[in-house]
Length: 523
Image 1 (tube, helix red, strand yellow):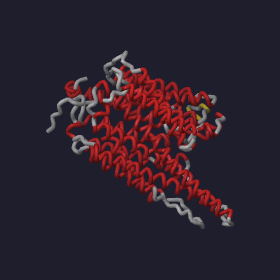
Image 2 (cartoon, rainbow, N blue to C red):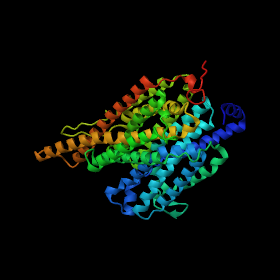
Image 3 (tube, rainbow, N blue to C red):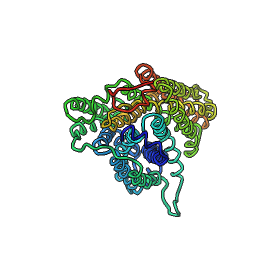
Image 4 (tube, helix red, strand yellow):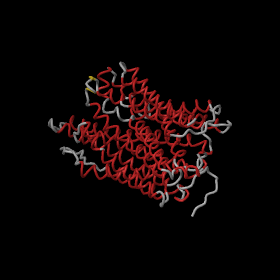
């Protein structure tokens, strides 16, 4: 689709309707892919009981999806470039839907874990293609900015929606009069949505050019194995520590394969990841900033959801509702920023957004806790200790996601938009895993230290009443979470520095189309 043709077609109401439905399909797919990373979290105890899964293996229900998703994103993005983005988008959604059905009907641990991995494969095909389809379906300027805003909002609220939806579905025990375990619904709900979205795609989405026969197979193998090693090693570090043998082996193999992958990419005619994708300074800065920012945001969901339930005593469904202001505020911020992007440079929007998010995380680090003895209640107030910072975090991330998504894929060659989208998604996934592991290490260390101090005090004769013991546990957890939030604030400051120093593109340029190197007429 040429820019002129796009501009002419969008003048007609029919084409506007076409673009509207195209955005609906892309948004549904992205929301489904993102929320599936958290939707089963609340259901884990029920899954463990029904399928008799050992505690040590239970984390693989979540990690298995993240591993497959994160390690296959580059390959999924490139397959869209080579074989048609709509075709790969549809294939990914169908795989995702079928895998969700298999997982929802699983009768044993092995089938469930295999289904979660297959879901990750489907997500890795669908997500980069969805972002690339925006660049090929919507003309540059306000229309594309609004589309990116909706996409960014779905990416940002997906985790919160997953917690809310997971809590509600897990509490159900029947559907249409049929008895069914609620946890199965967290997976089965994806099947009709994914398959129907895939079937509607040919009606509302245009197909891109295909270049079959140009797949860089050695690059695909080394890149995928390298990312798998990195994501697994980082994830394992969060539970087994950075000194664990398998953590070190996995990270070493991941780094070795990634190094081999980068060397290969410089020597092949049609690389899986063309080096030119990183040449543009603004694009590279966008990738780096999108590595650090989600790392801090994922930690917020992880620790805040536990704080709300364990310390404040909220039920799972009430905890999900507590995150609703985040969803509403992020959607509102994304809509506002999509309009501001036409008049304000991305550096200022994303720079201010990262600083707002850093302040919000610092606010979370001040959650009430007092580890002195005698103990005092640490149960914070939602409206004073959490709500203001949840809304501030949402507005900040809305101001980050929209402009950085725009700058990360802007002026990419048409044949590179899929892999560019894959790189952006990979940065988010790997950054999130690394951030959660780093913050988990900091939090665990503080919790272990305070727990040891408490045990020493008890051994020395310090008396605690039965009511004080759980309060002490709450204080210790809150202290560890506070350290994690403080580190998350630091990571967000790093993202802000990258944006302010290296992100250099004018808002007028974002309203233009065409590959990098093409003449740009501004004014």
